[in-house]
Amino acid sequence: MTSSKVLQPLVCCFGDPVAGNPTQFVMSRAAADAGLDWRFFTAHVQSRDFDAAIRGIRALGLQGFCVLEPYQHEVGPFLDTITECGLALGRVTVGRSEGNSWLGDNLLGQAVLLTLERTVGRFDQGDNREEIALDTKKRIVCVSTSALAKAVELSCRELSIELLYIEPSAESEIPKFEQNEEPNLPVALIVEGRIPRGLLKQLASLKWDPQACFLQVSSRSDQELADDVDAARQMGLRLVDRLELAAQEAACNFQFWTGVSPNFELIRESIEEYQAY
Image 1 (cartoon, rainbow, N blue to C red):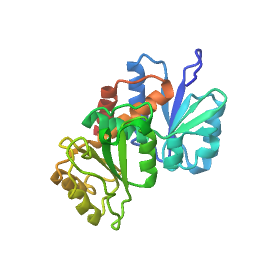
Image 2 (image 1 turned 60 degrees about the vertical axis):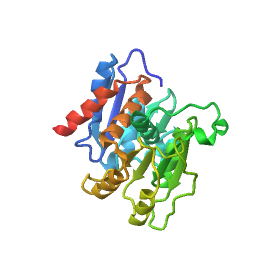
Image 3 (image 1 turned 120 degrees about the horizontal axis):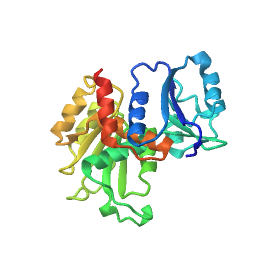
Image 4 (image 1 turned 135 degrees about the vertical axis):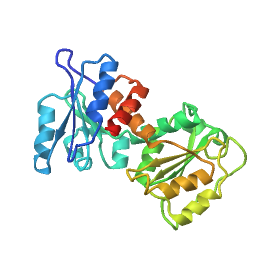
């Protein structure tokens, strides 16, 4: 991250629509709390103006941007480099100036892991993942697109984690793995979207760690996801508030732009306050 010591760093959040997005409100508060003289602003960019908006961001010397739909799949060609996680997910959500070039990223995988750590405890570090004994790894079951599973896997390369990926299909079967007592029992179930009924029965038959949690990665309403939430409760899984994931992703984005770790509780409270309006 590079920024001018003379000019106030600017970060733009743009998309179509942008109404109801808390980025400017949340990041402005986080910057003030961290003592940073940064400005965050929001711009409504229609499709006919998308190319001009990106060129303007680069020409005006902005420090970074947050890109909303429908442009997360379109911004890539305007960037010089995209991280592995951004490429894995197939969409860029944040970008920053690296001086003479621009870097794009998507920090959802990192946010998922940080959310789980706040719920089940920190994951052990390993200098070399190959050297980590299998029976000391914490198992995470991920029912999602291969894109999200890959992003989570990339984010946990240096951690003592075994990720069990399951395609969200009624025909999918859970990979066979040894189920004894702790520490072999899965500590988390990550689900993107809805769980097919046939697969749900298989998940319910598994033994789970007593502190295991359930994390939904979805933009669907609570009502649409109610059946899966009820099933997770019946499996004895602790439910992770989706606000926690949103706050973690926002905190990751703030650090991506500024290089400063923000006050997480302030970010969470700010999102909650904004959503209450």
